[in-house]
Image 1 (cartoon, helix red, strand yellow):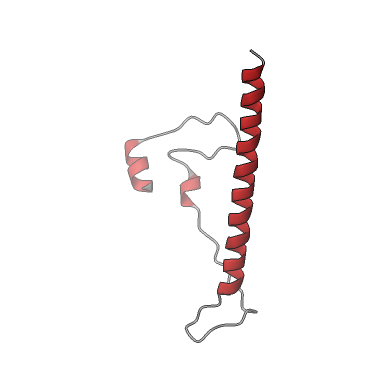
Image 2 (tube, rainbow, N blue to C red; image 1 turned 180 degrees about the vertical axis):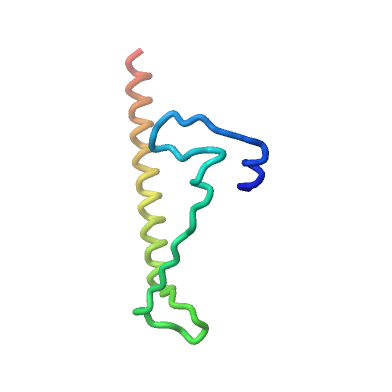
Length: 87
């Protein structure tokens, strides 16, 4: 991808300083950082993911998502009702 962008000379316009550069830039030369946590228990297959913990977090996120979408929907219906009754 880097060579494709550089060969075509594509350069994007930055409208804010916090935006990433698009095109020929040293930002394309980033190197990811790998972190290894060694103080967790390891299963025989080499996996240290606690599936029960992950499923609990997923369930919490799902419940929160459905709650917030329902509350947002109710609020939008209420606002729509207020707007339509005001005519």
